[in-house]
Image: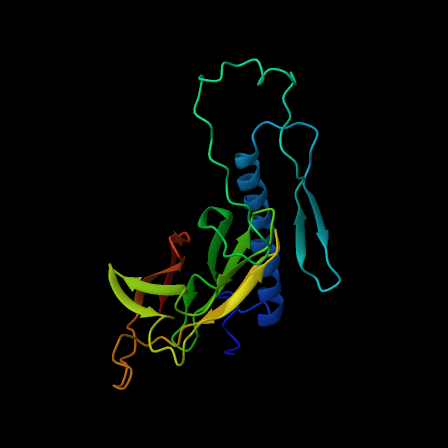
Length: 225
């Protein structure tokens, strides 16, 4: 790794220290997002709280309360007229290990620096969090979990280009435990032609975005010198 990859322009922080700080900050943000996303789907339950713990390996785990909201009047639903509303269809029960639903995932992308010198390698932190009650699986291969670099709307580079083999990597996501991937861009263009020499990207402003299924992260703007 280039020693300047995760340093500020002043070069005051070692790469490993900077990266650990980035991971800790982003993970904390994602935990908050996960709790908020869960709360939005839960409704106004009272007396329940999310708990945050740290595993022996250093992973941050969010434990969210379970259980459906209860009616204040147990007989209220029974007193309603049978024809008042159609009978709801039973929802499919999710089993551990089933594919993740897009609505249960939170994806985020962050750049190591805002400006990269001519010899620095642009490096990014890509994180996916499952907010569902049950663990699920998602393809985190370079095609399904893609990071794309564009400039002025033009596609410059993608992790999905020129992938050797099937490029499939199934990952089980536990509730609230982030999946983290570090992605490096070699500053060259990519495309469907994997045999020709790839031209080097010029200096300028670029935008990085991550995708998984129908979801995409916020845009990350950075500059190459």
